[in-house]
Picture (cartoon, rainbow over the protein chains, first blue to last red):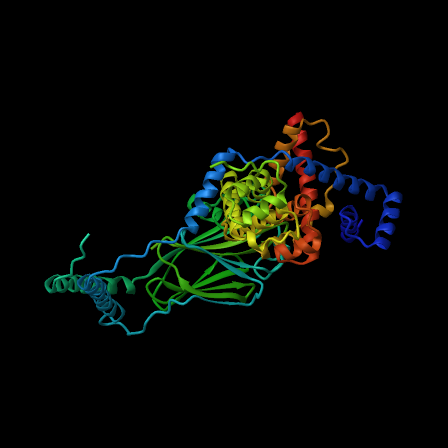
Length: 169
Length: 155
Length: 199
């Protein structure tokens, strides 16, 4: 039984086949034990799942769960209080302190970027990936400091030869 | 808490300290960078293929692989190479007969990595790779297994 | 002030009252449908704590969007659509999520489900409900998120292939493949659990 036929059995079970096709598949199932067995297996699995969800309950009491929902609704609906007006000196101070910090950082940065004796070339920190494989993707885990580049070539690709399946070397 | 303005003398000490640090940084930039490269084989089987004495991948590498969105649960080390890369130089590292990884140091922590498979470049990537971080290149292998080339910066 | 008893009102009445700002009416709706919303979240996330948090978020969103509900479906169905979208968003952010290309590769290069022997004995026959639930729970936990999602949306949410494809952002063919893989894998896992427990 090919894969397409197997999917047709599933579609028959799920009521996704057009009428004409459904009749044809039903007739085929009646004549083919293998098809009938697979359909039965799919039906059993569906039956098992139907029983499953009915038993799932939220493991918190009605009152407790509602109190959390209600609190969150009220928090979102309560407008945030407007900040009190600041004095003139407070405003100036708020500007001057970060401005001095920025000046120090800029000064430090200038010294680090152009150290004496270097070629003066600034280092590229942009990430660039040139791939022969357009289906590849990149994933970055910032907390672990790990970058994954996954190539989507089929299993017998340019890196691993299918002839070396056993050796992998 | 009241915010305080930094006095001018304090600013002078701070910039002097930063200048000394920058000078120290210069010395480290010129030094070679050390890496470890691993060729790993991933499988859902708990053992390597018969006749192959592959060891499980290093624990610290395994730990990081677990955090990645790849499904294989067991990783075996096929090959491991330690190497150094000098500033603006390319180091070529053969991980297998058909797989090579070239690493070029571009700056403090920036590198360019090329993956060569059966003589063809399949990937080139520039990125920052600070000490302790890993670049993992991978793909599918026959029989629902996978291969990885893991590049870890150790110095 | 007397608190109105909403327990005998139907959903439609409660929705209208909630839309007018009646929190007590909304609380009754929450009480009636919370298990269903939670069950959907748990089916998708496989983590109790996350499912509870997402359920809570779904109810808050439900309150905020009540005016957009016009009775085109039942209120319960409307709420489950909200939780499904929240779970999908969460799963996309999740580290455990596997990328589409790897999953697609697995289905293409694997094809395990096409060659699996048919499970002829119903692996759930003769089981107590609680034991069956536990086994299914265990087996569902071993499916990947895409496969589990397809199953949850089809079997529990009653979505058609077309709707699942739209919700998951994939083709109908992919939905059919995932559903087939998930069902066959589940059957094999349940059969395996039955065999292990009977040894």
